Structures are given as C-alpha cells and as structure tokens.
Length: 235
Image (cartoon, rainbow, N blue to C red):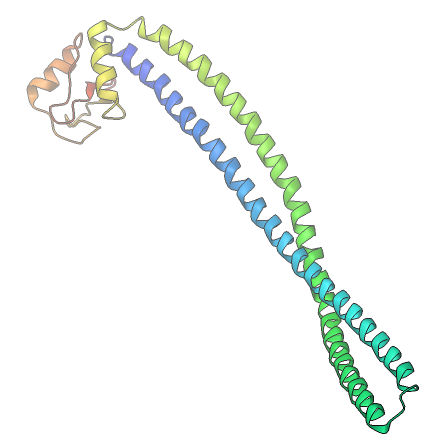
C-alpha cells in the first residue's frame, strides 16, 4: 500500500477540488435563479401597475368625454334659444337628448371603472410589498453566494497548489496512469476488499491480482474497470 499511498492522498485532494469546482459552477446558476425569480415578481408588479394606470387613464378619458359633451349640450341649449322655427328647435332638442344619453352611458362606464380601482390598488400594494421583501432577500442571498464564491476560488487555488506539490511525490508511471483513469472512472483508486472484490465496479478479482496487491510496490489495476487497487493494512 505504501507505493499507492501518494495516489490515495492525491485522490483526496482531487475529490475536494471536484466538489469545489462543482460548487464554483453552481453558485452563478443559483444567483441567476434567484434573480430570475425576483424578475418574475417585479414583472407581476409592473403588470399590476400597468393595469391600474390603464384603468385610471380610461376613467380620466371618460371624465374628459363627459365634460366635452356637457359643454356641447350647454352650447347647444344657448343656441337653441335663438332658433326661429319649431323644426329647428325640435332637431336641436333631439341632438341634445342623444348627447345626454351618451353622457349617461359614459357615467355608467366611469362608475364601473372606479369600482375596479380599489382591487387593483390592493393588488399593486401587495405586489410592491412582495417585491420589496424579495429584493432585500435576493440581495442578501446573492451577496452571501458571492462571498462563498470568493472563498471557493481561494480554496481551489490553495488545493491546486497542494495538488502540484503532491504529484511531485508520485512515480511518473503511476501518475500518468492515474491521470488517465480518473477522467473515465471516479474514484480512480479503490480498495480490494476481503472478498477480493474491487470496490469500484464490484468485480471479483483473480488470485493473481490479489497477490500483487498484497505484495505492494507496484501499480495493480482492476481487470474490469481499470481502477487502481490497494488493500487496507487492517485486512
């Protein structure tokens, strides 16, 4: 096992590096997810505000239309006093009646629109409250993730320096084999247990493999998966 011990120690470092590299990739994804969630909340707020603004615009337009028609009626009634024939008077009266009916219709629509304002205002207020609360939470969470990412990068830098140092203690042929197999199998270095089974692929090894592992001093690979085998000294 002594000859394999440096590989085991290297693998332990590589295992930490793999975990940190996964976290390094995952943190930006988590930040993006939180920001996307907040964007969805803000979109709901924007939609509610747009609906409220549109409703208020319709109410204002109705007010303007009512005022315009009322002024028109006032002007027509003034004009009516100067008309000389009954036919002209009756025609003007019919026009006034038609406009007054339009005013009644506009007032009814205005009332209906006004009735919808409180519900929309409540929806906007609730969406604003949620947006404000989520904004603070997302900012805090993303800030924590940013700090963690910085820490992960520092840990990775330290581990990669340790890895470089660790590889210098490994025989070149052992290291070359390990580097090759670890891209295909993980873990790359596993125990040969008491039943002479590779703990990587769970294949029973032939007696010759067991004997070579027990003797130590050389690199022995699983006949099935190619992982480097070692036996714990307690066996």
